[in-house]
Length: 267
Image 1: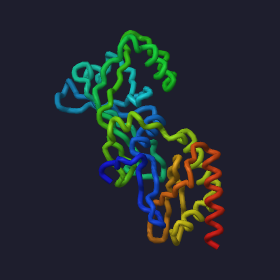
Image 2 (image 1 turned 90 degrees about the vertical axis):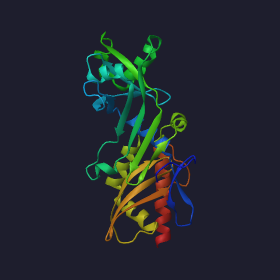
Image 3 (image 1 turned 30 degrees about the vertical axis):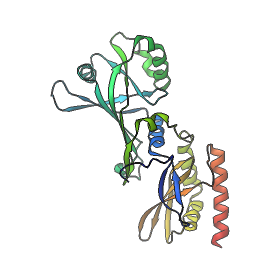
Image 4 (image 1 turned 45 degrees about the vertical axis):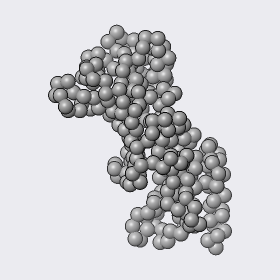
């Protein structure tokens, strides 16, 4: 996949009955990742070495339109760069997992001018930023610190190997983070640690033979991904929920029903 489909959701391979399997769009996945993360790599155009990008670790917050807000010091190199040329990009990646190749992790790059916010916006921007980074309360009011906001013009999303594409700015702006974003880690841990046998049943139910180990790698409102080790190598499988599951309780209900159905059909 090199560019996202204009459909409301993204789609993976066809299921056994020929229907496409629904997934959140790249825009929704980008908003979800950016909402969950707290820092990224900010690239500015170097004044000291013209033509070279200068990369900095940068905590950020998002405003309601998904635009990154950063708190910068006038003494910082990236701030000096931005004052000369406010074009910038911000790379944000999901946290690494012990059993996952770094290049298989999701990440998103935002590009656009990053100008200083107006004095009239300071109170609102300050509140948004401190809600995400409360420790910044110790220096946010220092006179050499100020807020900048990126006006997002380009978005590039990578969901792992072979899953990537440019996202339209309006799609990104209008997208909502996945409702399971805060619960997902707990769901994955619970399924992988306490219900490994059920995951094996689900994999076999979907036609994967010679299953040696299964891990649930991701979950969202529309379904979940399994990473399966077989005698022939590793496989990835997407299984949709029968209907949207927007809460942990709905996910649990859907998984219980699917495991029960799988057990019945595998007899």
